[in-house]
Every structure is written in C-alpha cells, then in structure tokens.
Length: 168
Image (cartoon, rainbow, N blue to C red):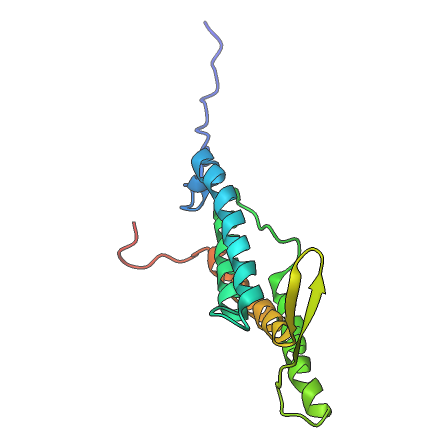
C-alpha cells in the first residue's frame, strides 16, 4: 500500500495590477528622448516670454503656463517631477513679490503698481533696459507655476477607488 498524500490546497496568486495609462509611457525611449529637447526649448521660450513681457506680448502669466506645460511633459516622460520642492511653496512667495512690487511705489507717494525703468550698459549685453515690472511678472510667474503644477499633480495622483455602473 502506498502512503496517502494530503490533497494539495489551491493557492490563489494575486493577479498583477493592470498598468495605469500613465505607466505605459514612463519607459518609452522615444518619449524620453523627445521630451528632453522639448523641455529645454519650452523652458527657454518661457524665460524669453518672462524677460520680454513688460515690453512685448508675454509676461509672467504666459511664461508660467509654458513652464507648467514643460514640467508636466517631464513628469509624463520620466515618471517623476523635475522640481525638488513642493510647487505649492511658490504661491506665497509669488504673491509676496507681486504685492511688494506694487506697494513700494505707493509708500513712496506714487500710484500703486507704478513701474520704474532705466538703462544699463554692459560689455556683454550692450544697452539694457531694466524695469520693476519684471519683478511683478516674476511674482505672477511663481503663482502660476505653483498653482498650475499643484492642480496638475493632484489630478495625476487620482486613484479611483469605486466602480460605477458601466465600468469594466
């Protein structure tokens, strides 16, 4: 008589979680390669818009939106943020800078947000115009980048936990 063997118990292995839509793009070599060049170009364009915004179309708002787009592209391509700080921290700094830029002329007896400007001449740039409006634009830029990235990152991190009728 052969010894009786105990019946095997069915072991349930956990099925691997289906990939999230964003996970499919993280290791895409084409997206990573293209995003590096696109990130650099969009950031350069955003800085140009910020720099020229007080004299030409552009400024802190549009430059901030361009920066948000570049940073979202980086996050989609690489799976992590290019920033090492929480973007929410930019908002109070931007508000303080913009408010201070407007308050200083007011405290000096001029209209609120009155811009001042002048010219510098350097060997590197030649004649260069400076304006206090650039400081206001920089504050707006920080607010837009902080708010835009906070909203985008909050939407990226959404993990639905409930199923509704019609989900498969």
